[in-house]
Image (cartoon, rainbow, N blue to C red):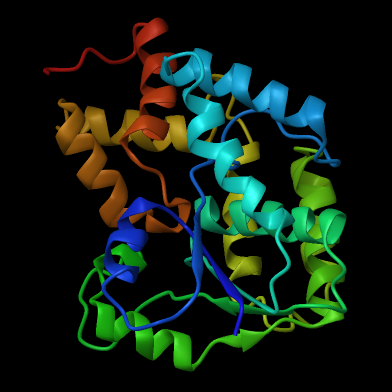
Length: 262
């Protein structure tokens, strides 16, 4: 069968290629949970993303095209079977919504069968943080239990993407409360509820993530490594890597609220 696996990052890819699963791979290397987004994913959207990524993470010119756009060109090929591999956290769920939006815009959904593998844990794996932790055999087990996405799932994903890209806490919360059934998108509500928290700011002008990092710092986590680990252990729902957390740490540093020992 002509099939494509859209993987949530290089950590999963490294384990996936050890499996016996057939098909091509597309490694998703964007981070839609950070930075500007717009409802329609078009050429202007990608230009804006490339500019923001390059400026924020100091990527070399051209690297965004090589790492992201070239991979996405695989979506133009005709596949009979597409499987999305995305974890439970906000980082993965927003990327998943973006992929589903892309598929709706670029593909005839009556053509390929589209499936989802989404995990928030695995038996015997403590402190689960993502599929990149799993073995090839464990990934194959998840694949055997993948969920077939329906028209309803894609309609729900489109609504979620539209609401997310407004970046308005009240609007997103009202939508979350109005959804009667989540179809096969089992982890989406919890992830987007975390986004509602992140959109809110306190009287000092700090959002939820920045305030958590400040609290951890004030309680003794005064190096980057300690802050990263402390945040991850308590707030894995956000799925943030070091580079994403650094965005918030830079904000705190610019205001003189933290001085890191690293």
